[in-house]
Image (cartoon, rainbow, N blue to C red):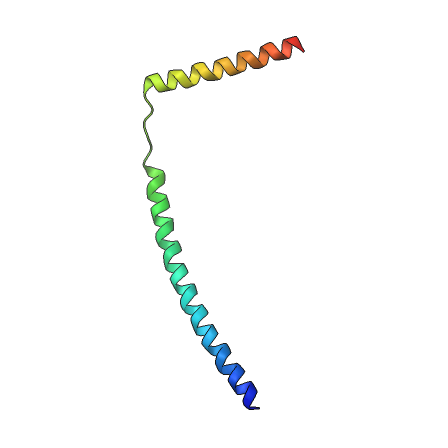
Length: 72
């Protein structure tokens, strides 16, 4: 019976440690979530020249794809 008492005491100690760890992680996750929401709001502006470069590159990719499709 003495062994069971020792085991129970150890389990209770581990439970307390786990509860503290869970509480700490919950605190981090709620802070992280609010930071993530704020970061979604901040959008980066793309210059007109940048958008034109991207559009030209995409058109070139499609042209290459169409050319390969006709050749096959």
